[in-house]
Length: 310
Image (cartoon, rainbow, N blue to C red; front, side, top):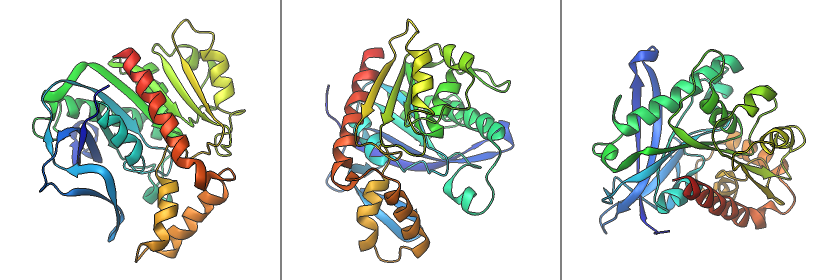
């Protein structure tokens, strides 16, 4: 598998067909970088940011056609909370796009603007399909020329926690919303699945990868992964599962990195430090020394899984 340099951009798109719904979107892609290209910085809050280890802003595209992975954040998440994972997948030869899901972001929950689950499901399905459309250039545009490097026959979807639920229902449809039949496989990282009917899980028409944190107390395996896997494992499709012995609920996200970096970043509000501390408290013992290995295991498993279906 060829290793690429990584380009990144952040943009806004407006879905005119859904009451001008505005989505912030991050894009990672195989790139040619130059010495003058600026290192990407991810802004957690106004004035509070951290630098990427591998991505460069608006770097030139590599020539060729690459598969597309649409990534969906978890409940109370943000689109760039998975930058390390998304950068690594882009470096392996994918275009990765991730949008916010307004109504279910951290800001929405902190301000009481969060929406009910059924509304959230419908909005998320519209979001992932619209972002895929924009990436392909069929409705709107994320970056000039991006659609030229995307292989329209190889589209995948994945997500964390409620984003894992989103990935599954995108392939089946729910609440009268149709499935997006372009996605060839789905990934659920520490996926929240307990509310999904068994017949819906059984009807997932594409291969699924479940990444299961054995130390996850938010989506405990007994409540989410085990019931879903019991159904999926009976399918003829080549579903896969990876157990993560030291994985907590945030095993695929950047939160462990935030916990390391935040105390040394000037201007981080105490509210944010308290929130990060709550995540640390809910993480498995020793996560501070194992999270990089756990994240790397998931990245490698995702690469293997996606490559098998390209």
